[in-house]
Length: 120
Ligand code: 5GP
Image 1: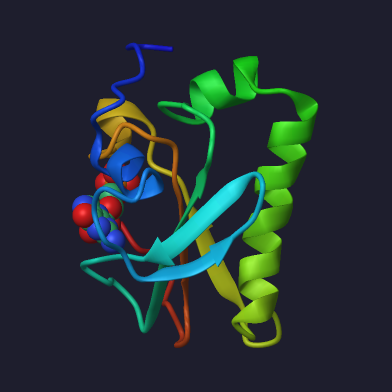
Image 2: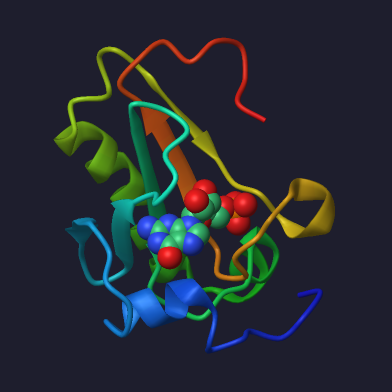
C-alpha cells in the first residue's frame, strides 16, 4: 500500500460505532451505509470490515475469504435494494489521482435513476 492504515479515519469510526451512519447492510465481511452527500438517488458506500486503505492493499493482502465476502456483500446490497433489474453503477476511487478522500476501502454503489455515461 502507498500508506499505512489510519485507524482514526472516518469509516473506521463508523465501523466502530463511534460516529453515526445510516446503515443499510451488515454481515461478517462488510458494512454498508448511505453516503452523507449523495450523488444519485441511491448512493451507498460498501466497506470491508478489515483494515484496508484501498483496492491496492485489499487485493494484495486480504484473504480469499475476505475478498469473496466483500464482493458478495456488494451484490447482496444491490439485490436487496432492487437495483439489479434497472441497473446500477459501482465505483472505487484509489489514491490521489483517483480522488480518494477517505482512506478505508469503499465501493460506491449508485442507482435509483438513469446515471448517464459516467459519474466523475
Ligand atoms: P471517496 O472520494 O473517498 O471515494 O469518497 C468518500 C465518500 O464518503 C464521499 O462520497 C463522501 O460524501 C462520503 N463521506 C465522507 N464522510 C462521510 C461520513 O461521515 N458519513 C457518510 N455516510 N459518508 C461520508
